Structure formats: C-alpha cells, structure tokens
Length: 346
Image (cartoon, rainbow, N blue to C red):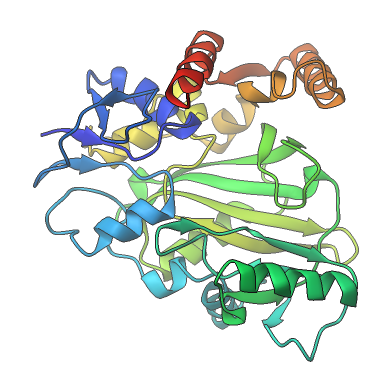
C-alpha cells in the first residue's frame, strides 16, 4: 500500500512532514515533484490518496471504492459548484456572500464576477474578476470568451473590499458520524501574497473564535454528512456587521501544517484512523497555542520588495507577542525547491 498526493507545493510539503512522523513515505507521479518522492507508476487499488486541490479529488471520486481517501461521500454538485453551494447555504439558514446569477443585462457596479468552479476539465480557472464599471465588464466578457468559457461558468457576488484581517478560516478534521474525531482551529489572514482581490495568504495567525464560527461550520458540515479534512472560509463585512460564508475547500488546505507541528499531527492521524482514541483538545488549549504561519516564498518573491519588508515586520511583531512562527516550507526545503524548479523548467 502506497500513499499519494498530486501536487508539489506547500500543501504537499506539509503532508510529507506529517507522514514522516508516522513513518509513512509519500509518493507522486507528477514529473515536477520536488517535495515528495517521484515514481512513474500510478496509484493502485487500496492505496491511500491525499488531495490538496479539487481537480484530483474529482478525478478519483468516481473510483472511490478502489482507493482510500476522504471525503468520499460528498455531494459533488455542491462542493464543485460555488453557486450551488451558495443556494444550499440559504436552505439551511446560513449567510453566503450576497450573489445572483450571471446576467449581462442586469449588472450593478462594482461587482465581483466569480467562477463557479475551481477547476473545469482539469484546467485551473481564475477565482474571479473585480469589475467596477461597464468598460471593465466588457473587457472581462472578452477574457471569458477568449478562454473558451461560457458566461454560466460564472456568477455575480458582492464585492468585499475590506482589509486582509476580515478573512477568516475554520479548518481541521470533521466526521459527522464520530464527533470524537472533530478538531478545528480558526485563523485570520494577516497579509495576502499580493494586492490582487483573489490572492492567497502570505501570513495567517490562529485566533479565538470571533463569533460562533466553529458552531456554524460544524452545522454546515453535518448537513453535508461530511467526513474528512476541510477549510471553510468566512469574510466579515464591516458595513453589515456579518460573517459571510465564502466557500468550502474539501481537502488538505495550505496551512494544515499548523496541525502537524502544534496539534499532535491530529488531522493526518484522524484521516488515517491512526488511533481508536484520538487526541482531544479543549477550546482553552487551542486558543492558548498562538501560531503565525508564514508562506516562505513571500520572503523572497520578490526579494527586497515593500511586500517582503511588510511580511518581516509582521513576523517580528508577532514574535514579540509570543507567537510560534511556522515557516512553510522550511528554508532549506524552499531553496532546494527553488533551484530544482529552475533546472526542471530549462
């Protein structure tokens, strides 16, 4: 039995670190794998799969009886379609970001034009487009057509232009059938990777629950009969004083290494049914473990930039506040990846 992942980025590095603690080797057949061991063979029956993006999950979902992975019993039409997920949230009295169907004749600016899917036919789609006026809207329509996409691959969503810190994530492991395996933390984004609206995070920190986000998350996951690793994103609308549900990532997410390092590797242990009596953490224990997660690449890409300076300033500020600093990947691994990738791309 082998254990597989399908990307070579920070998520895969965190997976490898966690599995090494359990004396398990992680494999990938991706030709550009850096962080995990490469092999030319494909996963075989009864192998264990770890997903860090939706494309691979959807690809293998139809063969869920052949392999071991979670989640393996999800409503694909909800998980893979952000518009359908927003509809679902309303049916359970949750609060999605205000939205409407794509209608080129009914547009109120400014608006965010959001992709319904993260991936389509194994092609990564843009998260969406910020649109402030009719001229920009026409440019975006041209981009959509140039990408051989249809308008119904997108929908309209309220444009939320607030600081990075308004972005929250509830993440961990959830099992609707066994509450003993449930463990969650809450993180707040400290700084984005760049200034674009759809940017990923350079820095996130663990925080206490600001407004019953854990209870809301567990309710949503229970209604989905969800079992597996997850990240549920929220966004705080300062004007409306509301925490909107952004989206659900049904997989290992970018910062899951926080659990590997500071919470007994519990997400991977629960994923693998490693122990019949999983480690439990009280709310007080979770809140007392203050962690700042750092995307190591944000310190070097680009180097000596204003962004790098701001990241370093935040790291120092949180260090003084007694936060544990977790670099992902580790510096030595990052530089190995950097030079190896240069060679592979020649």
